[in-house]
Image 1 (cartoon, rainbow, N blue to C red):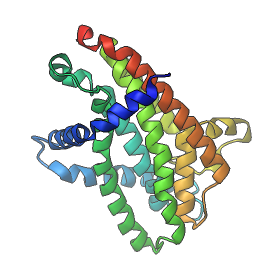
Image 2: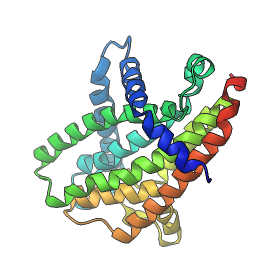
Image 3: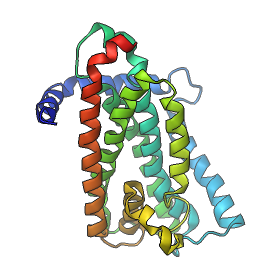
Amino acid sequence: MRNVPSHLIAFWGRRDLLWHMTIRHLRGQYKQSALGWAWAFVNPLTQMLILSFVFSKILRVPSEDVPYPLFVFVGLVPWMFFSNGIGSATDSVTGAASLVTKVYFPREILPTAAVNTKLVDLAFGLIILAGMMVYYGYPPEATALWFPVIFVVQFTFTLGLSLPLAALNLYFHDVRFLVAQTLFLWYFLTPVLYPVDMIPQQYRWIFDINPMAIVIHAYRRVILHGDAPDIGRLAIGFAISLVIFLLGYYAFKKMEPGFADSI
């Protein structure tokens, strides 16, 4: 762990390369796709419509006195950034084998660029969310200014998980399948589709240690209800995210020397 600060400083020194790799990922994301960037709108909209029909019309899940499509979309947009970012980052080192074996650069740039790419999808999702808020008559209040603070917690956690998964997937190619299954389970253990109040008291501890549950609940408070986030829970979420990031970064750098031999 002693070398982590120096590695981070070196990483920051190559931020120009990180920018270049992020643009490269963006150009290839929807390459040879008929709809192209329209998928950034179509995908979240389709999921929101299907989930709204099933969970509000059929299962009648409560939505904190907010129209269910708006309620679920506030949780869905950050969740999609999280899950898509981890999925893309997990394959990032394996998918750049030619670069890893021929050119030296801080390898953590690859998963970081993969996560950064999903910021564009997040931005499109927020545009849709803004339109929905206007449609349903929920104009943003001053508490929405908390959004960047909450997002820092989420981004730190997402990148912290992505780094070791990207390295492990290079050594064990079935990691990507394990990640997909874990994210599927995690999705239902996080209050994306239902409010926190529906969680039985004996299972609340799962919510308390789940940074994604903490940030999604915080997003709903600041965007939909005009309340400040629960500072205590947000601080816990940030502490967990920071520890995950430092441990994940350390694990990535420990595995990095063997990358070229494992390709």
